[in-house]
Image 1 (cartoon, rainbow over the protein chains, first blue to last red):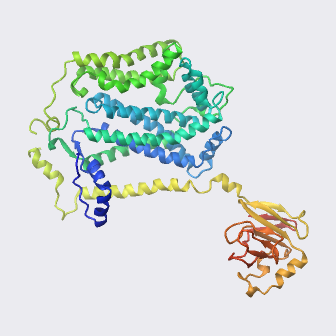
Image 2 (image 1 turned 45 degrees about the vertical axis):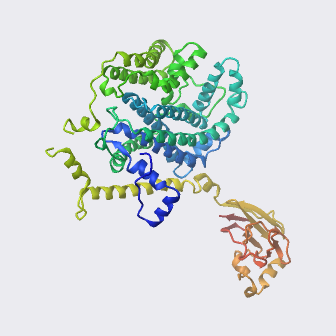
Image 3 (image 1 turned 90 degrees about the vertical axis):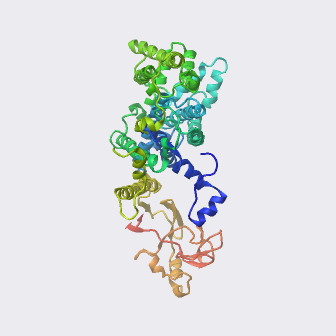
Length: 408
Length: 186
């Protein structure tokens, strides 16, 4: 994997170019000859799906930016202009909006896969942390993109989220004013969100390059959690992983297309088709579905500052995962107790998401608090303790043995 | 399932190149569908840059009332973002335009081809110099028509190029007379 690639171009021009910029060799060693564990399942396709979705969002976004006007008096109208007047504008808008949802769906599955199979463990700690950084950038990008529509939800989400920073003692209000560029969310806010929303996806692309680089240094994890021991444990990336990933990406695109063409507004909120009104707050402000679990955690804590800290901590705690989990065994396949706590964690996350959409009253608040406790306990109590006390199942001798049986 | 794994692995990867296998068919079929898909993806991405419905609607024909335009006066209106000169020519200016030797013009065209029959006092031309696109100045130049200050092209009372670098006469927009005092451009 390190050192010169085995790529030998036949074409004379390609040989000439390869001596000067070994791009062909890089692509060959990274995506053609790259040794890939032979037992990867479809959960491993989501990395490629995410790279694809980033491309889709950037292309549809750049094209939408040709028709959008980032001014409070024209933004909403320009989006309606895209929907009604621009050739295929309706398609581009629905691709971009539902693309964001699909992007987050894929990233959550990708992250849950990482937690289940211990992909964050040594030597992939930096790979995991780069992923957390990508996730944070995605959340910022998605939030700002939603504000650009300048509907009721856009405006009030911007107000609520920027107001979070006022919880910071002392400098909080100054920070919020600095973010707004005024005395409230207004035109300066919209303009700067437009600039940053265009910028951040390219920052994400840069961190993705580092993420893939870090991955290729360590090699892929696999469902057994044990490293490849010989050539028998791996296959060449092309054609095996290439074709398998292409197939599953098509399946993913079918789900994506289902939303875009049949239920394009299902994941959105009807209130965002009402132009922003700074004088009237909607009765139930909710973020888009992919932020709901964190919204539930924020509202579960009765104190303003502690709620904001809990919100931040619920995301940042992910970065410490490689050190919180003390188990020497990577994959949950061989960790029966961890497996149960993991699935409970998945249910808790989905539950928090459901609670985030509910009004913060009565039973919903109680449940949100219980689930928040489990969320943090999973990271801070379960992970460290299980490593010490869990009786793990015996690991197979090698990947090929686990796939082909003892005869391998 | 009876052969040992090492031999089975060889079966998977090597195939005699003489016969076309199912795999070849699948590769070619998938590639073909993928190419069609890629082309289909390009269609909306490229089409979205064409004028949208609101721009096309804004380019609909316009009516211009000729009554307020005095004898010898030239007015400027906009249609599809282009300046249109409407020239109410005096009898003398019409004669000058008709008397010219057409063959001697850089872009030969008789005046009668540039006006509507029965309305030869009205000249309606697109006010964009055919050289590099500046707007010529009215009632200037030695032929009583227009003078383009950018590179010195001179047009006559029929909007025809007489001297200077412009290759063609001022273009004619589509228009018709709705009544004797009103035209519809577009």
